[in-house]
Amino acid sequence: MPRFQWEAVDAQGRVSRGAREAESARALRQTLQSEGLTPTAVDDALDATATLSWTRLPPTQVSLLTRQLATLVYSGLPLHQALQAVTDQTDDKHVRAIVAALAQHVASGESFSAALAHYPRTFSPLYRGLVAAGVESGLLPEVLQRLADYLDARLALKQKFVTALIYPALLTVVALAVIVVMLTYVVPQVVAVYEHSRQTLPWLTRALIQTSGFLRATGVYWLIGLVIVFFIAGIAYRRPPIRERVHRFWLKVPGIGRLQQSLETARFASTLAILVGSGAPLLRGLETAADVLNLLPIRQAVQNAVGHVREGVALARALKESGVFPPILIHLVANGEATGKLAEMLERAAAELEREAERRLAWITALVQPVLIVIMGAIVLALVLAIMMPIVSMNQLIR
Image 1 (tube, rainbow, N blue to C red):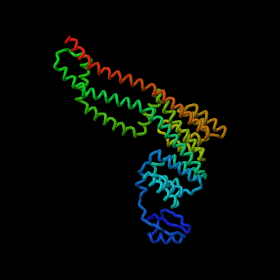
Image 2: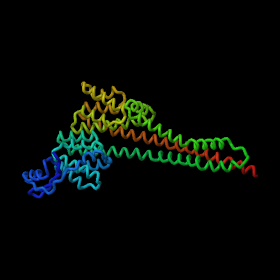
Image 3: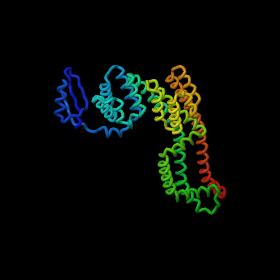
Image 4: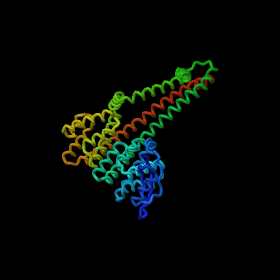
């Protein structure tokens, strides 16, 4: 049976929109009229869901529309009208298309979480799980508000890390560009000058000339080889056993491993806090929180903890047995279980772990920046000396 999009006006002049299946547009008009509505538009529904399901909205847009929707629903507006209001408010065409489609799904009788499931690239399993828990508990406005706060906190933390890493990355790129230009352009020109002189070149200059010639002769092959290596590594990284070994290696790297552990456990704690605080059962919250983790060893530890909790073991003890979670998380979880304030203690643990991650990031960047400057400065100094030493020798001979 075909599906149609419709728009109608009731006796009070209020506009309603939705999507419904009917034998024909005429049959749908008659059905709407029998319901006391005056149809103003009945069109063939385009199958936009399949196209929009591949659309991925930026996290900033998802956070904004979630906060707007939370405000509107909290004010008492019905969900489908709140979605329509968000559609009218936004200027982004992609956001408008997805939210309008959500409004149509909800208006046609579909649950909000089921409507969100049509767009998995935009709304994560955590997002859909929280919405489902909010609908079941009748606390959808509060859940949407907490979800918006959670998304904003994740974005703020990510922005801090990106900002801290910009300078080291920019310094490395500029230094490598200088080295490549000198080896491929400056050095060959200097060699042309030295070929007409009969003096013996310093060993540093000869090494530089040989390195430059080698790179110019084989540079294309090195580039092709790097592309092939990265391609093979990308394919291998998709395999869970290989990815798990890589994750375990990074977790053992001094400094970086503790930083990643703090970030992942903070994400786990904050996710579980918002799930438990929204009324979701603990086991369901643990399973959903495990899905948002990136590092496979920590995800596997959470999944093992789910099995222990299902057998009746306390959450703090189950997390402690894995050996991958920091003590502060375990102690705060134990305190939360004892006092009945698990969600609050998880939020405190997440905040403390995020602060620890920020401190470690500041320490790593403070150490990496001078090391990069020294290394790149030494390389550039060696290149300059290799070029200038023959010139100085020629000047001394002329004198």
